[in-house]
Length: 331
Ligand SMILES: Nc1nc2c(ncn2[C@@H]2O[C@H](COP(=O)(O)OP(=O)(O)OP(=O)(O)O)[C@@H](O)[C@H]2O)c(=O)[nH]1
Ligand SMILES: [Mg+2]
Image 1 (cartoon, rainbow, N blue to C red):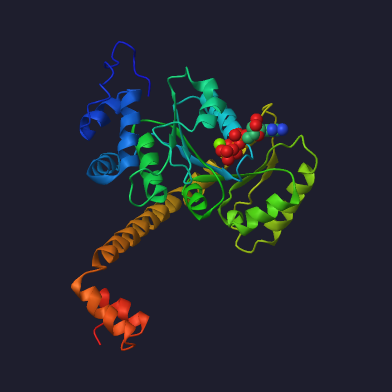
Image 2: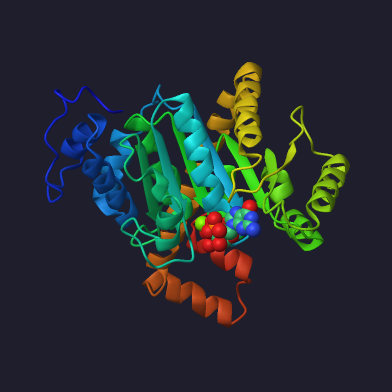
């Protein structure tokens, strides 16, 4: 991503907004331009659509998108900071997206994350960005994959996506990565919670962080047992690894496992299959979003009122009423 300094273009004025211009500058390594592109995605609307179209073409550069999820405070950002270092040691630019569906803040700064990842603040080949919902109509579940593609298209070799929390949206976002890492902390409750939240299904790798604390070995054993009982397990058996992210202990093994998983995916053609599947899933989410929007526009309209009258008079049951509104009721 960092071009020859002599060829590096002058930074684009952050006020210039034409997506094509911004993309050109971003591809040449202009960090402000990358930030602007992500802001456009975050805000949604027509400019976001333009950015999405510009950055959609398959980017040869990106090797691996790694999702990092887990309960609040489990140490995801601290671990991400360590993983950035491991990825950078291997070479190639690293893009990091910290996604917080519950946060109204945006513009690139969830303060805690910034502080915990500031070890890389002077590295031009590390681009860290926090993301909140802002205007994007479909919310972060729709904006996040677009943001990931922006980072891939401008030359990131590794893209890390940290999601805060373990709700449905977070699991969806983390599960959209090539490799999903689930971070838990010592304690029986966390392992159970992880399984309840559907994390057992999306995890390619479990990390028991804060492993210097009591109960780490037991938590690892609990997870291993749950994984052994999981009938839907494919060829890849998610490893359960212990880390102490604050000291960096165990992080090299995590990074090695992340790369192992990547090699497994590439070797089995599973990487392409996953990327194809998540594109289709993404399109389905957009479709549902567009339908919801249409349904909202229907509400209050003449036809809507007529169907509503039939519904309330019990001439139409809710199923047929909805079908009539969608025009699929031919009866
Ligand atoms: N004892 C101990 N503390 C840790 C470890 N890793 C992280 N922490 C601490 O745990 C707290 C939360 O760490 P973060 O990295 O912000 O956790 P997070 O999962 O990103 O938190 P959210 O993004 O708010 O969900 C911080 O005070 C860290 O210093 C560890 O291995 N051991
Ligand atoms: Mg965090």
